Length: 200
Image (cartoon, rainbow, N blue to C red; front, side, top):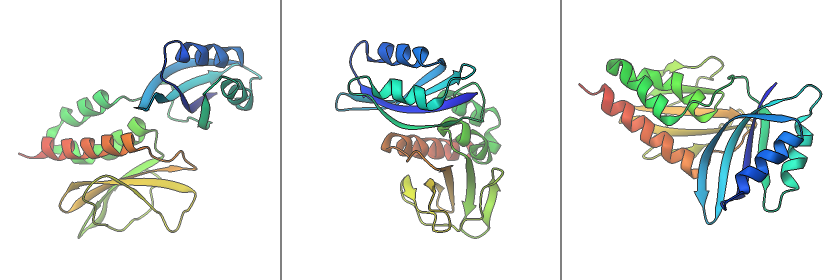
């Protein structure tokens, strides 16, 4: 079964190798790793892994936390399948049909950010495009990418970014993990890029 593990570890040589060994010894097979954020001698990585038959995610978490300086931020089943969708792949998807770039945000954001859903909200028209299971959210003024509170769903973390003066894009994860500052910056850049690509 695929899982997505978000882990904080020291940004020093050998640290990732020790983490990979611990995951392997606990019954996890690493499929992909993406560096999410680096700051002050620490790195936050997303690790996509498969578990061996009988292996439990708790044992993988325990093996990771036994390593000095390692902290598991979050682990969850990952239904999106066996690949992490990188930012460059998202940009490529947006540029395939430039006139559809803004609408394509709803397709690429959940994969790129490991979010459960995304939606576009227009100032006058409301929700104009959304992923399956996305709620009907109102338009809010956003000048830069920020974390959002969903009053009706306190267990879901959300973030939004301005696409243009009348449209925002919102993404969310049920149960976490919280969106990091680096993810907010990436969301803002991707939204701005989609608007630029779509502009005739």
